[in-house]
Length: 96
Image (cartoon, rainbow, N blue to C red; front, side, top):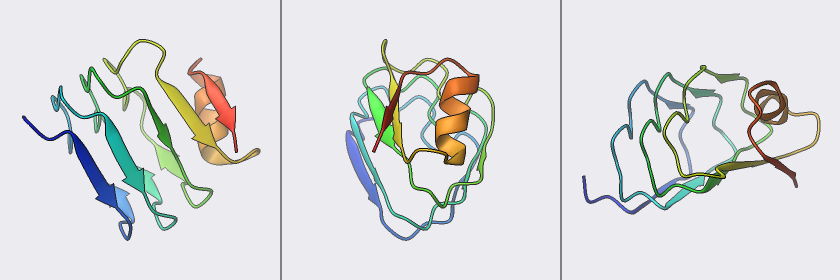
């Protein structure tokens, strides 16, 4: 796929395999309403170096970021579900 960037300002869920295989995806802007990210949603997004995830997020399925860029980083609020997820799965974390 040739998709390189996307803005998702008002979504509550990113479903299973939504951007899987988007090897040119480098930028995803996510709004504050996101609650769920499904399995393999960003699998093999080889150029995606990181995501900023909102405090509203309550579910991220394991393997969501499998195959993303080396050094893939999650940016999230301290104490948020996204921060816990990053810590649990040894994904580099930046607290915002």
